[in-house]
Amino acid sequence: MSDTSNWREQKRALQLDRANGFATASIVCALVGIVIFGGVLGVLAVVFGIIALSNETERTGRSITGIIIGIIEIIYALVVVIEVFSYYW
Image 1 (cartoon, one colour):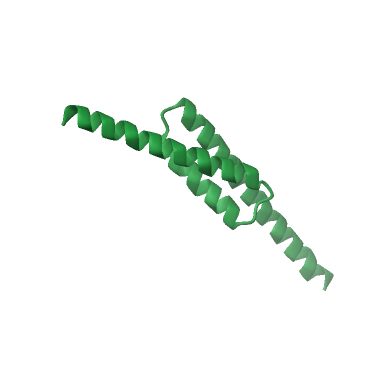
Image 2: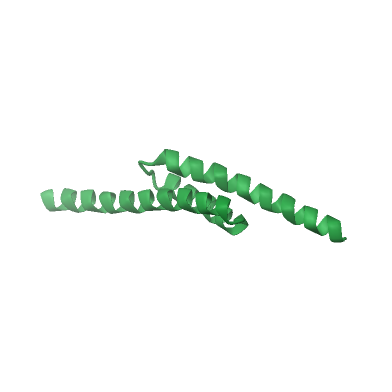
C-alpha cells in the first residue's frame, strides 16, 4: 500500500513541477515579448499560462500575469499589423 501512495505522490510532484515550469515559461515569454516585438511570444505566453493553470500549478500568479501580458502583446501586434496594412493599402 505504501508503494502505491509513494508512487502517486511522486507522480503528483512531477506534474506540479511541470506545471510550475509552464507558469515560469509563460511569464518569461511575456516579458521577453515586451522587449522584442513579440506577437508570437505573446501567443506562447498565453498557451503556457493556460497549460499551467489547467495542471493546477502553485504559481497561479505567474500564469495569470503571463496570460494577461500575452493577450496585451497579441492585441498590440494586431493593431500594428492593421496600421501597417492600412497605411500601404
